[in-house]
Each structure stands twice: as C-alpha cells, then as structure tokens.
Length: 217
Image 1: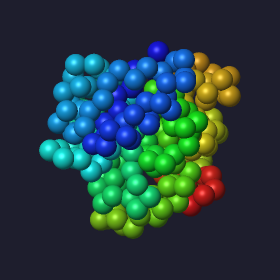
Image 2: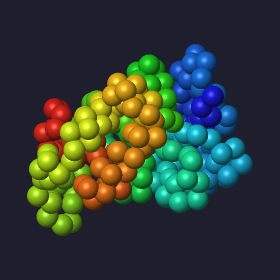
Image 3: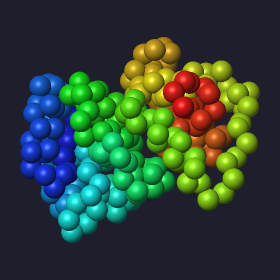
Image 4: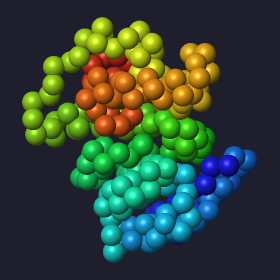
C-alpha cells in the first residue's frame, strides 16, 4: 500500500486529488495539509511514502517544506504540483530532490501512475510541462552548461535505464522491461547519477531530454 499525503491550501483541490486516488486499490490517502508548516508536521506523524505538494501556500511555501521533508525523512518522496505558468521557485525544487512535477489539471490516470512511479523510486514530469521545464532549467543555470557527456561514458545498459526513466518508469517497470533485479536497477541509477554528476532521477530525465537521448525538448 502506498501512503499519500495531499498538501494544498484549497480544500477542493485536496478533495479532488483524493477522489482521483481513491479508486486505486494500492493507494491510501492518509492525510491532508493546508500549508507547508502543516505538511512537515503531517510527514513527521504519518511518514507517508509520497507527498503531493502545492507550491504557493500561506504560512510556509511548498518548496521550503519540501526541502525540510527530504532532508529529514529519506523514505518520503515529493511530487510538486504546479500551475501551467510555472511558479518561480518550482525549478529550485530540482536541486533539493523533488521526484516529479505535475500540473494541477493533470488527468486522473496520470496522477495515479505518477504516484505509483515515484513510490517505486522513479521520477515523473508532466508531458505538457517537460519541454518548458527543461528550457527554463537550462536558461537559469548560473554556470555554463557542461559539455554533453558522450554516450560511451554510460554503458549500454545504463543508457537503457536512462531512456526508461525518461519515459516515466519506476524501478519495478524498468526491472521488468530489462529483465533485471530491482537492486540492480538501483545500482545502475546510482552509477548514472555519479557519471553525469547529477543528484536525482529528475536530473537524469532532464539530461536525457537536453542531450537528445529522448525526444521532447
């Protein structure tokens, strides 16, 4: 069972997301929070597997709450929920380890798939958000973009894992697709992060789009 905490200052949004997730037998919404401060408290008390985190909220924004949650609770993963206009600090969430980005009007099935994927250790980017996210992420870099790393710096199997991560797959799906153990997939992901000098799976996905490993940039 995947335990989910929904964080948003609008009750109708929280209720809507819970309704979307309620139909999946493997997901349980264990709590709600209406601010970043409340979200940190709820994660401390409930230890959810996945947090759906709004960005703009009273008392404390979702980004600072995400930073604290990820620093204190290693097993909890956070999906940032944003608007189509992309809040200024959504991009900074890449650097603190958010596992995904979805739009508030995302399709219910897409939301369910995202929660399952992130719970399994994957990363998710809304298909409509990905091109803009990558473009803006590259533009906001303070240092020159690193020279693209040639494919041969990653093994053939590691490149296979990169492509599947970019398609939104989690560890279970990747392991099944490549006929590997999940522990082996985790090892590959760790090696990929080290070779690309990136911190999270989301960064791997961004790298894949920026360097033409998959289409969509």
